[in-house]
Length: 346
Image (cartoon, rainbow, N blue to C red; front, side, top):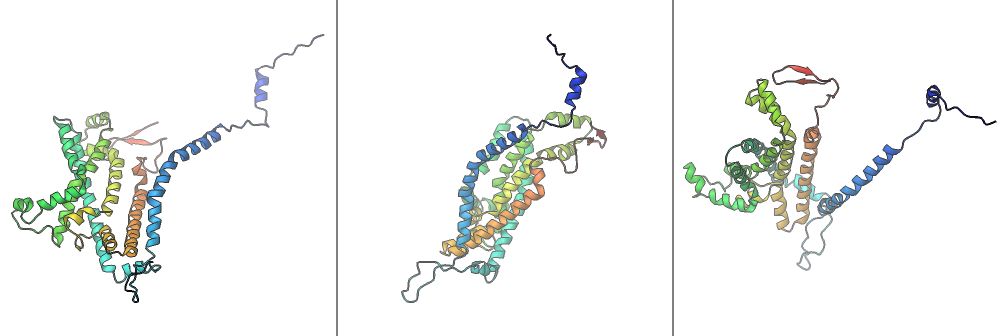
């Protein structure tokens, strides 16, 4: 007699599913993560290769060269030797010892130029971006005219302003005073700062303008309905939303100002204590065939730039990528309106 099996009911199925013991494991997320990691490593490998060739190799070569001194004159033959003597850290000791005055003067000039020019460029560039963001007739022409100084090569810009700042140039004619802008003194620093701000402020303005164009207009409409003034809208809406783009622009400008060379070199001249920077100091040593000390100056400049960039990223890393304020979470976080009221969000 054939025996028929009755399929188990829902209760039996539920009991079977809740039976302790074996637990099904899923390896799909781990496989996906490993595959994504290999793909990411493959995609960034060309960039890492280029950085190794362009940045790491020259840095290591400069570090090695800084441990050698200049070629010495052979008293027997009257010619310079074929090899450079290995002097270990003598070049660095000379920089901070007997040659320390010139180094610290260049260090101060580099720092002053960086702080003052980047500060002025940030203010001027933000103002340019706000003006170019407004809707008015001829806005495209204004944007093109503002970007012209940034597009001009630095050497051409320095020669142009050297003619303007000449003793009988346009600047003195407008001011009504005879000022020697390209001579030693504070006026030389002012000339370099003015020309640098005139040239590179449009760069910050361009990046800030890109950040302004992604802000939705609904935010400003809600702020106006809430009774916020234009100044309050700028401080609480515009500035926080363009802060990541503004900080990136400031970071790039700081790195560029720390490496300033061609503008003061062409505009004012070489070996001028009032405007000599670390890059000019390294170039002066190399032009005198003192490659070891020049490499030591270059290494110190690299460490200075690296320290500034690292501090900038560490202190403002979250703002650079536009993260939320630390300590806040999406759950139960209140939203404060411009009028000061706090609204709870689910």
